[in-house]
Amino acid sequence: MKPMLSGKPFFTKERIKFILRRIVLPFLAIYTGVAAITAIRDMSINNDEYAAVLLSDYAFWQYDYWASPCAFLGSYIPWSYYFNNRNMKVKWFFRAKSNDLEEVIKDKDCQSVVLVGHGDIDSWQATDMEVSNTLVKKMMKGVPKKKGEWLQLSCGGDSKYFMKMGELVMEDKKNVYTYSKSVTTDIFVFDAL
Image (cartoon, rainbow, N blue to C red; front, side):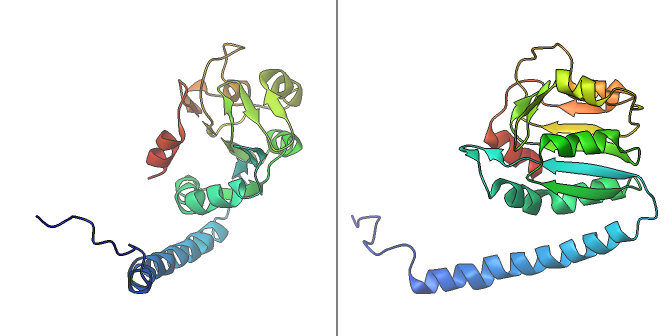
């Protein structure tokens, strides 16, 4: 019986060239083309209302410089498509801080909010600090509620305040979407696909 392993390294020059030429480069070409079409479509929306996507850089080792760019690459096309279909442009906030969230909450043109980063249903870890329901209540003083959607892509988990953060901001509680229980990175990846 012959051994199953040949003893040769798997990543030879030929295999690396094959992977780059036949898999990686075609994928990048398709992604670049679709991203260009998405950008043109987003620019063609003739509406002042927009959706804000806030990408926090607070990641596995507290501040992670690559968290926002990686999240952007994976989500630019689908989220732009989703909100463009609702006649809204999309504004991206990289390394989003608590004052960025306050800015979009107080902006009358921002009607939908997407939060990406650590947190649970009643808190979000911005790049600079944790934002809780208490802070969002202060941000909402004198501000009308929003008509769009609130999507919070954070771990879910237990609530300290028994109220989703988005319910403080959105007019219709049915338009507040969070994970109802604690989730793992695998679930985020499968949801993105």
